[in-house]
Image (cartoon, rainbow, N blue to C red; front, side, top):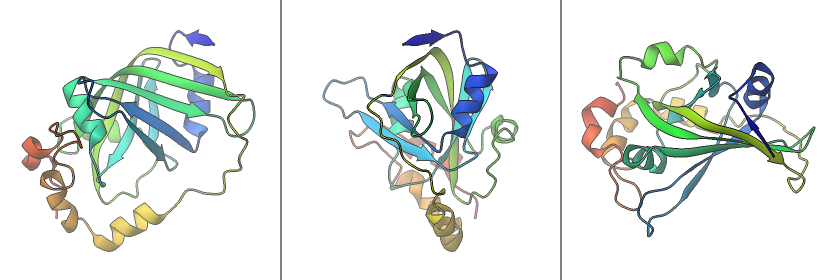
Length: 192
């Protein structure tokens, strides 16, 4: 294992070239559920500097990450090499949600190459306090075929209007009842 003093250019290039990464968060309560979410699609993760990264967040079936970050900010991003050198990199830190209506959203959004988005909810920004790697000897070798287009096609087919209710319905609370978007309804409602 190696602990880095932040993300250098070589590591930034490696991170942004991975086709998938995983986000882990948890509530403070010991009886709450730990959440791990897979993330992907080229151009949805960005390295801002040695100690700051972010990823695009979409409206979806849940809002565990948002609820956990609002409660305690703890987050870990994990990247694993499925080809090449067997490596796992973990980015630990404090996360925060930048909603599409927030003042800094537009300036942060320019760092992400992916532009085709209908139902974007936020950008998850992470201030890193630890960057480390470990061996990925048990991670299988797999071939990356392509990003799935299902999310983009589904959102484009539905258009932005159906997502207007998500902040107060599907994304209102975590599965443990923590507030996610319910009290931010007007700030999180997609246009349309």
